[in-house]
Length: 317
Ligand SMILES: *[C@@H]1O[C@H](CO)[C@@H](O)[C@H](O)[C@H]1NC(C)=O
Ligand SMILES: *[C@@H]1O[C@H](CO)[C@@H](O)[C@H](O)[C@H]1NC(C)=O
Image (cartoon, rainbow, N blue to C red; front, top):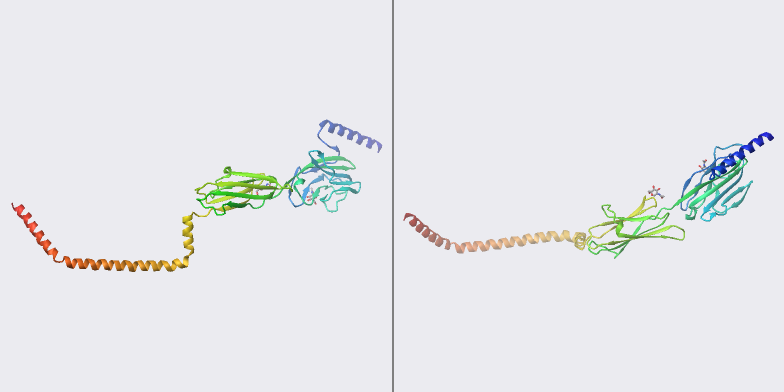
């Protein structure tokens, strides 16, 4: 018994020497604590930081578990502590992920009940069992989906001729995203815009982008899309430019359909009648003229005959 203890002490010593030699490795025993390198958390929802002792060892009792968050000024006070059967340090909003966790449960994952922007970052989990101590780190990437963009126009009604300014806004997103503009043919117009990103108290971002519309441009639709930090499109909104005044007028006339439906036949029939009357008038005039001229043609014929006679006479000569 004593010899075995001595032997294991020896092995422990060798391992310690090796781990000191390796430097960065924080292994100090025989247990293997495995943590997922990165977990994703949604703003306002539960987040899981997964760490388990693997493979589980039936003879292992967990004595101490400490979860801490790293900050630029080192690790902050523990978020969750288990120590020899007690939970001496448990901050609100943090718990073991396994319901009714006890020291025989090798899943020491941390659960964050209501994920906020400040939860984004690096965490450290330290576990002490009857067979050693091990420390691992895991990071939480918090994301929040941006709201559907809203487009405001100045002036309120923009036509192809007026030009103006469009402002696109989207908020409550994380991390910092981008607003981009496109026309109806999906051609990007972002280079003509100016974007601003503001972090609110909660750490969520508020994005705003201004696009100046040139007078006489022929773009009819402006689409503003909000893109997340990894460049994926989340949401979009489209602003439609009003038709030009001319086409707007025709559209307005078309809207007066009942009136035009009555007016059009009246106009057609009216002009038909007017045309008929005119034709009749012209016809009557012509026939009157024809009657008056009916004598003159005879004279003309005579004259013509005369000349033709003369011509004939010329030929005869
Ligand atoms: C650890 O426990 C959490 C919460 O019950 C669970 O979601 C997760 O899958 C568990 N991990 C493993 C490796 O069993
Ligand atoms: C970004 O958006 C894309 C598409 O919606 C999505 O697949 C991706 O997970 C998002 N990334 C982040 C970090 O939110």
